[in-house]
Image 1 (cartoon, rainbow, N blue to C red):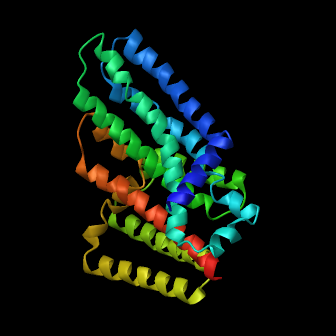
Image 2: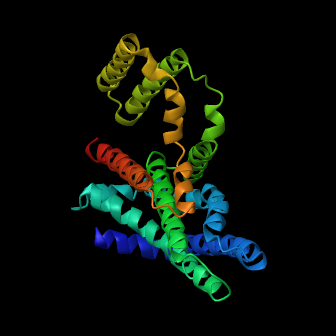
Image 3: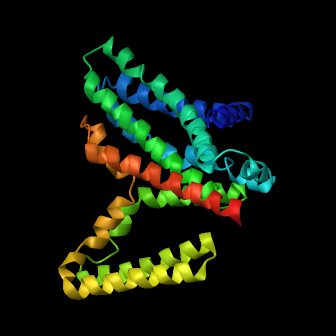
Length: 287
């Protein structure tokens, strides 16, 4: 895994994508830092980081679009699939290389509160909790981009669907308002989601029996739960959509709260999408 990690890190820096990624984050963050914290003398660096989270809609697709899709396009993924290295080491090597690229501007941003401290009073505990949350937020969204890059051989398509997925995550609060909070509306919505999950599994595995059984089980479970206790579905779709809004779980970090549930959520997103990436590549290795 370490060899793959070093190779990917050198590849990203050599291809200039890493430099562009780092420079773009520091440029935008520097502008907001100058405007909010220096010119307006605001000691709240967490709000500055929160204001630039829109950056992930742009920089995450740029960073992740070629990580696996280019391997498929150039057929060099065959070398990886036949290499005497486990798939999880390959995926983790690629993921950690992107995290290292992302860590560089985050570490530089860590010096900004020190600059602020020379001109006023800064709560370093609150500030660095916000920086830590900002790092976790980026790691989670990079994991999403990693997975989406593994399902296509086109860098453009990978970038577009990554942008679309992250954009939907950012506007999930607005999307949830379109759904009724009644138990019947949530029940119908979850039936549709069950069918969509089965279709996604079929698209990934091409196994009709597995996807059909999974879809049938999910539908039956929803029907039984609705019959036994329909009150469980009241407002459930809103709670479910809130889970899909990654950025919402960063809000507590901005306030200086080391939210354990937020940390678990971010780590869960990372683990889930890295696992899905491993399974996607594993499927090609044995197909």
